[in-house]
Image 1 (cartoon, rainbow, N blue to C red):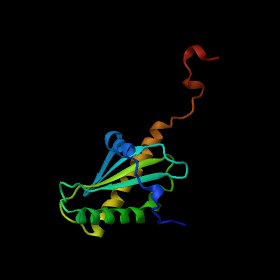
Image 2 (cartoon, rainbow, N blue to C red):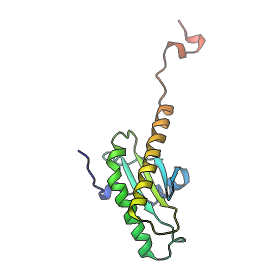
Image 3 (cartoon, helix red, strand yellow):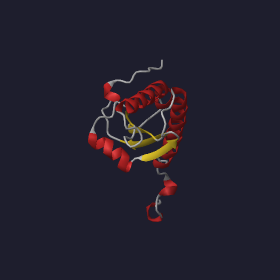
Image 4 (cartoon, rainbow, N blue to C red):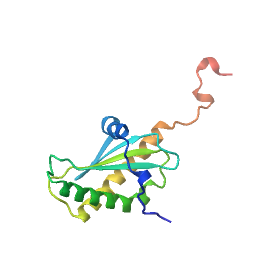
Length: 146
């Protein structure tokens, strides 16, 4: 059964990890959202920690920034069970709003689905690239063959 919770332990709150996601993480875009993702060491029972950001440069009023963050959090909370059930490695995610105008929930929800699908596809391709097949007799150098 899918759980639509977003408890405190799944929120990205460590400042160093937050900065590392922006510096070292991979960036995926589905306008008006950008997703920064970084494989991270998280507590054992947590698969994903997420943070949400809206630039002060685009939205001067805190009320507007907080409203957009609430919309993004809600779209993430509703879309999370469909995308993170098969995740094998823990990730820290930051969702950044790129638009210049205040969005409605339908627009944010579509962008969230698109960016999570892109993340899922990216994770599947990097997982297959980083997990090579176990070495067999053909992969040994010539001097080690019997």
